[in-house]
Length: 248
Image 1 (cartoon, rainbow, N blue to C red):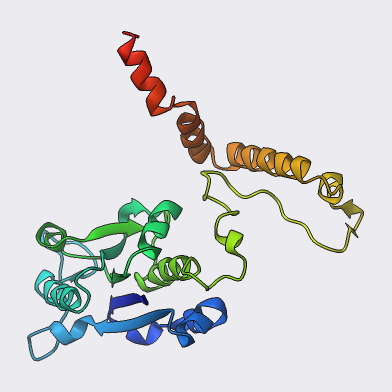
Image 2: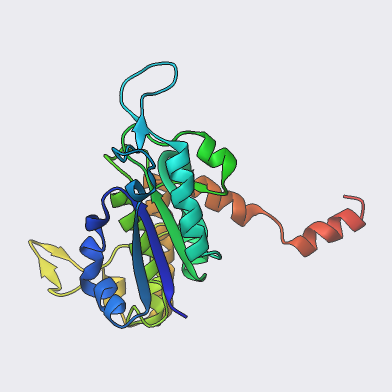
């Protein structure tokens, strides 16, 4: 099954962009994934092909028109009826590695890229669209964010990465940041590779890596650490059921 990506955008020439290179580019050539772009402007109905209007209530900038967006989304849905539709917006729910894995395991994804001041809110009321953010930042448009989403999905597709463990032994996969990595030379500017990594003791290496992941997550991403700690402290479902049965 080929992972099919569909992009709704005012700038289709931005794709595949960097995704034509490296792992993603090779996978595209090998037809492990496909890409289709849809020009939103094609669904404007007036003679000037207007896709935006001034904000209701006043304000700066322009807003993408709901009727044009809906026509473009409906067309994409007919092309890819089983693919979830994501809209890239700073207001969206932050994307997670877990959600990326879900998307990569599916038939593909349709991504709606915003511009200007964003979308007329009624598109989210009238169509099933998942609002997604890639961080607490504002971009000129959704296209760079869409490229990020696609890159994250493509690298997880079967046969894209060389080592099977490459997609699991990294940041966020276990709820933690990845441990530090080293390679030759053994010494550089007086700094050496940690001795444990040169010991050949796989159990000690695994323990060190786990400890480093926890330390880095606790210090650098306290939000992730709180979530990880909370999940780890939760009793197993069986234990909860046993406690309930015993009246605890």
